[in-house]
Amino acid sequence: MRKMLPLSIFVLAIASTMSAQVTFTFSTVDVPGSIFTRAHNINHQGDIVGLFAIVRGTGHGFLLHNGQFKQIDYPGSTFTSARGINGSRQIVGGYADVNNVDHGFLLQAGQFTSFDFPGAASTDAFDINDAGDIAGVYVDTSGVQHGFLLAAGNFSTVNFPGAAETDVNGISNSGIILGAAVNASGTSIGFRLERGVFKTVRFPGAASTGVGDSNNTGLIVGGYTDMHSVTHGFVRTGDGFQRMDFPDAILTVSLGINTCGKIVGDYQDRSGVTHGFLAVPQ
Image (cartoon, rainbow, N blue to C red; front, side, top):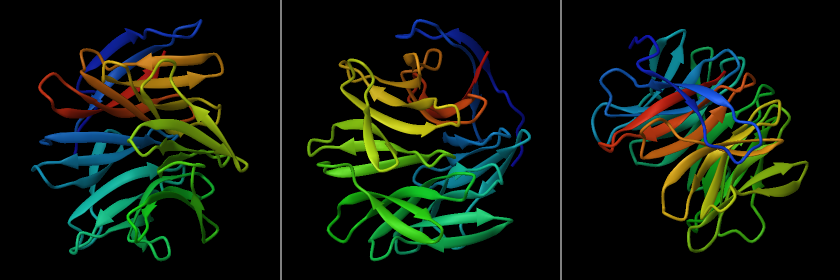
């Protein structure tokens, strides 16, 4: 599949809780003919990976490189999502087999490798850093979700203290793990895990917050739900939080960020259709 970007471009000065506003140029990222597209992550070269669907109930991964889309399907799978990409263009994600069991995968040099957290009922990979460390989630045989880190061939569990379940969405090149702690009622608080220490990340006044990714300069992106049940994206710098909304969207979530500060994610238009986006700081 081939498509040149951008399909549409908007320039927006985001409403901010920071002292200094950041201006972004937004563009839509849609796989041609798709009814659903999500941009999951972006590496420092600007390659984007994600998920798309042509027919409801199906899913395929994609790589967007030099303005051209390439479909990614794990062999024999019924569903594939590409979620993380590093500077060496190693890609990780998840796929469902014919028995509808989820597994993680690594795609490098055109070759797929499947992997599972030991003893888990299901496994999904969400990000990979330049060192090749992989972060994601697994569900145990009791149905509880945990985060995981796969580094140097060894798995370790990531559990936020006291959480009913843990979502792990990203890992930075410095090894910081990003995600969300979910309580028994389903409310989430974002977190970053650095050198064994958890620190919470919560958008001011939000009902719930989830963290997606962080880059080498310490910028953090994610999404939050406000007190009116509206979901927005955000970016956090050393100066504070800044809301990100795709122009005229009813929902926005920021999922990935690269070293240059380019951000990807998804938004929902007023017809309820989900699109991917790329936001470039000016």
